Image 1 (cartoon, one colour):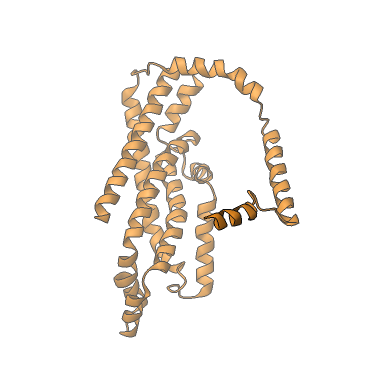
Image 2 (cartoon, rainbow, N blue to C red):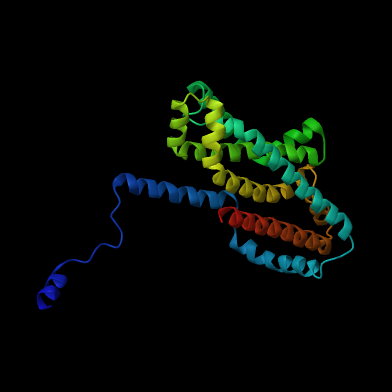
Length: 270
């Protein structure tokens, strides 16, 4: 015990932080400079935030109690929001599945097809759904159809990527066995790849529906239908009590969709 104590006393304590290299130190300096310039660029001001607290309190005070004056129009707009999210998700999943097959490295017919489809999926995923909504509102007019199309494109990018990754990670054994028996590429995909990746497909689809439900609220702000336009009108006209009713309705819709999605995932896993 004494020897151990002596050795422990002689051994220097470990450094709390590893000394960065010159390149690492430069990277930290650049990152800090970016953070500072970003805060300055957005005009971050604690003084204005503190001075705005009374206005926040006044708005919150005017939001309660929520107004029941327009419950029926709000309920119909909420239903339209969910229909838009569900239709866009279903269409996006159905269209993303064949694209995901082409974007799977060992299933695609040619490397050029693989890179081209991967590029399309990346484009659909990186462009925000609000931009797609603006595009489709200009193309097909105002309303939920434009919103459903925007969600469809967004879900193709979201599901296409994760579907392709799930198929690439699927067990190759059954696929190679079917290939050795002379099965076609389509038969291998239908009989071996999709069944192996189906649990991941289901999880991705349910997460996509949750994301689409939240997105569909925002799409209404640009005229793509749903409850977003109701919220915008209420806020623009300073009807904060009506706005709080809409916010509560949106919250309940998102919670219901998320809980139903979690329940379905548990049932499918069991």
